Amino acid sequence: MDNCIFCKIANGEIPSATLYEDEDFRVILDLGPASKGHALILPKTHAANIYELSDELAAKAMILAKKMAKKMTDGLKCDGFNIVQNNGETAGQTVFHFHMHLIPRYQGDGVGLTWKPGKLSDEDRDEILKKLNA
Ligand code: 5GP
Ligand code: ZN
Image 1 (cartoon, rainbow, N blue to C red):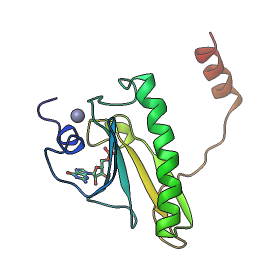
Image 2: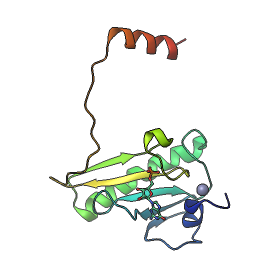
Image 3: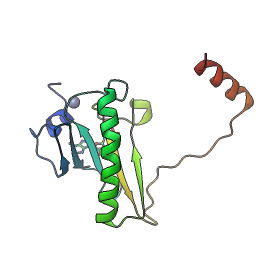
Image 4: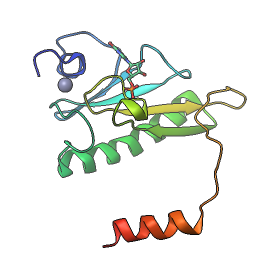
């Protein structure tokens, strides 16, 4: 993708604060961090979102997320860790090159990743099960 900023960053055409790199991925610090150490896993090949990502890269990305969670938790001494991945504008995606957010959490950091829980109605449960298990 010629005009994709994350393609350029992942492939080193634009410099970035890199925490990790291998043949498939680059892990960089987010320029607008939710917390200290907020990082992004970027695949080097372009996929706009999870729907376009290959199974192979999806599997590797999760293994890398696990490794980074351990390394960052040890190194930054954070108290918890969120892994977030947005697909589509409605879900908060702003850069349309697949990425996973690695967000270290610190007690009292005030990072807002929560939602107000609703209540699963019988109607919704039945409708969803019918739609997805057909
Ligand atoms: P999204 O909202 O698409 O899930 O996340 C995009 C993330 O990329 C945001 O957290 C934003 O701060 C970060 N970001 C956007 N442009 C750049 C950039 O040029 N460099 C870096 N390092 N992060 C960026
Ligand atoms: Zn891209």
